[in-house]
Image 1: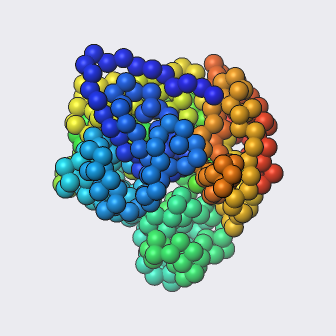
Image 2 (image 1 turned 90 degrees about the horizontal axis):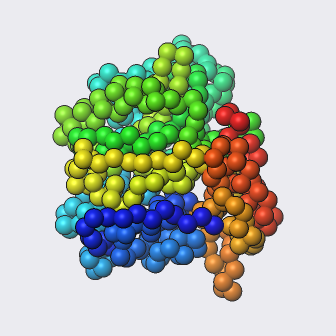
Image 3 (image 1 turned 135 degrees about the horizontal axis):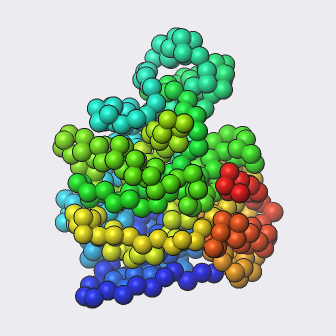
Length: 436
């Protein structure tokens, strides 16, 4: 098990933090926040079995806005850090502001960048951001007519939040028609699919890039490459993410400068112009095409599992960085990143992303954590009545490695995976294959 880096500060400031969420992303954030010398108290709602090792977990659902605000006020919390997207789209940051609480995350109006794919395309089109050709439909018949006109491949997207599963990259017209029927008529994603977008299928390497934003200033963070499909070789249905690594070799310093100049900053300016300045972390989903980087989508939070590899590489005080974003001081802030590579393998319950069993026993994490360079992040875990570790979700563990090279990080992660004894779970065996 790796120890997070320690930091020094010139002036001692005490900070009590409430972290919202209970997945692998939140475990990585809690792990990094716990290293800050600014921190004097850390709670996580609702947390998980791994987060309980570094924070006090409280049984409040991440979407229970009134209860979260009440708890933060009761504990005199100095900062609320929001992990998942749903509380942000529901207005947690607004509720915190109304209660006089500092919150890292965008307002509900700004969180529409993830809550509505149509809104994102409207903003970025107005800002001149390079992206995909797109069209919006609330009628399945009209969508099918457009599909027949455009042909395939084509991308079908539910407009609203669908837990990372509302996108179908259709290779054939028949596959796209099935996606339209499933999303709009069968409502496999509920009301998130009342409206859909049909988008040009961009070709290239997909990369996730992150920037801290304080409403006016954007500070580049780092990039990672996710693996969305469930099976080796990028086969099978999309998931919330089966693994990631950072840094991706294809994402050069020149590309980062282009993304900041042509995508991130123009979008922030357009959001400010609309009266909805964006504060928080901007997740920039990119396709690196032959003609340059083009925007696939925005998210308004750290990715999962990308956050895990970013936190392993971050050498700056995370809490200080989040405070600078909240307080509009990013123009005076900088971030340091390790030159090492990090890679995380997601271990998921058998059957995921479809129906899966819960409460299956997991052992061997102590041995896995002893692998040199390995770090275990919990996602969907809990304790049974005897204190044993059991699965409690679809994506259950993030088994990570860090090393001087991506191969070293890969080998550390998979050595730790092999030390985990969990017959009820599986993982991909090819995370990082594009770079390796």
